[in-house]
Image (cartoon, rainbow, N blue to C red; front, side, top):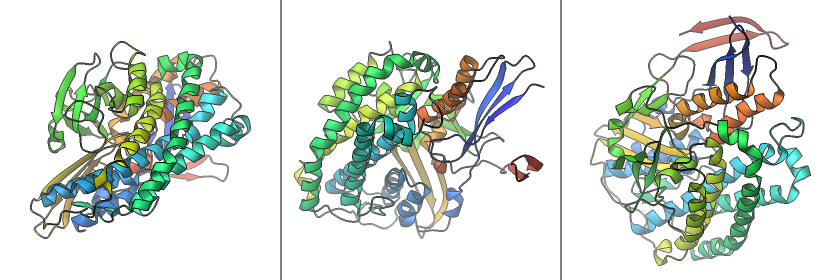
Length: 474
């Protein structure tokens, strides 16, 4: 038996995970895995709750993407009621979602990945962090803080709170937008646009320094999935699902989210609490597909706003066919921030945005509902069943990080083969193993599902951290 390299925990991500690299007798890489070690169980604990409480409950899954969970939950509630939210409610949901994308993408790029991208993958670990970034690039860090603040302020002005606003409800939203807040959002747009414009220019200048990472950070042919509107343009909130293959050919299009189970299967492994979705017609694990920023830009025909469309065209020119390296999720996030800022500008110009009719009221008319939106990390699906009183009897969530689970594991293996040799394991190689996971920006708090009997591992550790005893149930 060869040695095992363990990175515990993976740093600069949301949640708790481990990377394990198994070496053969000659010191070569035999296998590599990304293991999610936390379990939440929201699907089970919501049973018995009124379905109309679900947006407020499920947004507590995560403090980074609560708006995404609330919107997916709200759409599932719309389906149970059998109603279409009023125009003003749809516009407000879109506006809040834009704020959520901007703040989440800014967090990922500026706070979590910029130390690698601007200080270098091989930089001294003591300074390869946000503190070191402040010392080396104070203006950029200030921009990141300001851009994230803008996104959070949009959420607060629309939904009442920056985190867990409890504002989305089945049938619409719970509060209208004031004219004063509309104007405040409008006044902040020029600064946000200037920040993302110079950040995109800076990032594109640095791309040439990361050829090895671009080649190895989960660069392989795969399927891609994302939501698009009726014209095939990017649509984070109201779209339908499109799946394309590694050549860019459309495999399935205009998929109603209610039919997701015809296309997506769900598997589990005993070594991770994050389930493994796959494209059902190809089976498990061959049905690997990717979601998220780069996948969305791969599947759409354009963004639908002028500046983002120009950046989208430049992004798509990186490769013939879909952009296959998940390193370019960083690039795609910046383009989606630009798209969000432009979309906010369009939304605040809509007269209906400050309308008073914001909710369609009804009793539960259907025993089942599916809600689907694009979260910052990728496609998010909420599927609910209720009894005659509207109480939850069953829930299934497929979060973006789950969709990418097979791809993340394959990406870790690809990086391990490239940067780990029998002779040495440099610190920079270990950082790249973490960085390929950071490229996906996983939200492990959202990994809420275990299929079948949960595996359990209890480790007793000595004060020095070494394992005294391990008890497991598989």
